[in-house]
Image 1: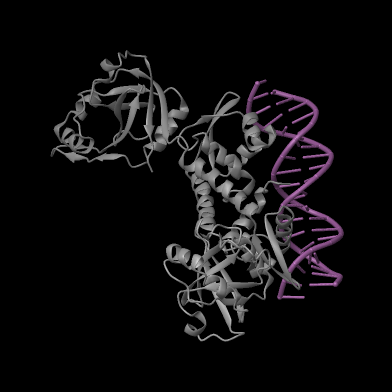
Image 2: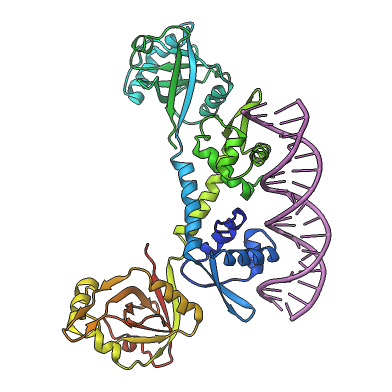
Length: 227
Length: 227
DNA sequence: ATTACTAGGCCACGAGTAA
DNA sequence: TTTACTCGTGGCCTAGTAA
């Protein structure tokens, strides 16, 4: 009896937006119904229930009435608002991945060492990566999908370039931390189309050495999401 | 089919708070049910409906699953959040009163001219009021009730004092504007207990003269609410 | 343990309508 | 016009239970 029912949220919120917190506002059940996408009868019932619950108070002028939100009504909406606020803004705003170290073909290392890339790394990441990438195999579908989603976000963009013969694609970098210790960047390559079951990292340091990682070692990567 | 149903708000919001925006989170329908104050079955159904609606996506591992909020799910919660945000914060944050000018007994004018009051007015309102109060008769129950509510808020407090013989009560001031023109303060006196059908205003200027008001003239007062 | 089906109750809603 | 009643339908929820 004390809690606000979820189907009253829109109704109460509408009264709020009309200034019902401080003033008795004049409104008909028909227009209220239209505004909350329900019937006149539903609006009438909503008000009755809100009144019984102590969320609003009414003053009648013959058939019509004025309505005002009570302190209790305010705190209910306020509570909900802060609940959502928490959920949205202070929810763990990082992506967490787990996977195992594997050996790559030295391919990533080769590309990332090209001068046109390192120049951009230097200016955009403020460091020149250790020559070599760390390859991590994601063994869980949910991590793969999560990277998939991430890859559609805007990271730090390293532009593509051409040496006259061929084109080298863009690279998107997402800052993160491996095993809570080493700062690194997850790199998404233009050439890697959809398969993110193996991901690559670059860092200022030699990650493998710093963390004493071997093939098959498990690593945990946290990537903060900023929006 | 596209809109989020109100009874799913809590469910989705809970998934959010667990970090479900960026990660696939592992959760059982039983614990989810407990968290949203519903049964395990209801939680199961909610997830099914949210999935069908495209608000979440699931990955199954045998019987259990991981769940993640989709972009669509995010924008729904976000929309609701902003709706509430608008309702709460940018709702007309002023109290509006209407009433008619009446003549007082000169009583308020007398008290408010006492030096111990004017000293405090000078320091707390930055002006010494014109000697005389404007009395306004509120003829609508809703305005009276609104003032009733207001009187329980903290305005600018003018402290009570004693001259040795008797005590002069405190005065609470609420800044406002009469007829959109003259700045003034609604004063709530300690001695006025509950009846706010007649309210009094003080101002730097002579309100009656400035606005050419006579007895029975209708005035409109706006009092901003700051919280 | 887990998810999710079925059955049944209760409640929210809209149509019709009185006042 | 207005509010708000009654009544029927549909949908949300829980209990029980299968897998």
